Image (spheres, helix red, strand yellow):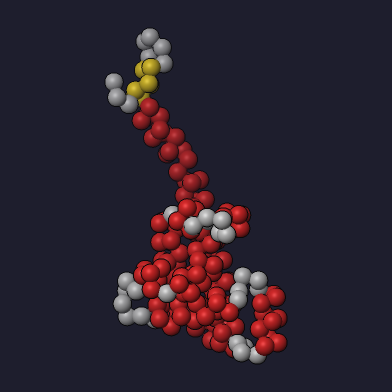
Length: 166
């Protein structure tokens, strides 16, 4: 019979019932892990994006400040800062609700900034460090990872921009 596993001559165990019982027992812990992960992703994204936005709003252009900032925050370079600026000017502030989801196609610098500052937090630091230079992002980021990062960015971008401007 489908969904049953033979245990011995007289006993069959419903595998689906066992799976449901295991899920009921584990669900609260799994939900807590997922919620903690999502919360951590949002906090890390906020930190990285705010550093860049604050720098863009206050000090960009002074070469000594640039060197000090790039030394202190090695994930940033001029391309990332340009992409972040484009990301917020063209995509986040857009009236078109679907424009942010087309970032991958429209602007490579903005998408690169999105990957480095936002998307990398959805897979974890070690995965990012080991994979981002060797593989295409489609090989280690799922569509769900990208969607989560887009939603977090879209929901928080206006607050982060206001915080960065002081």
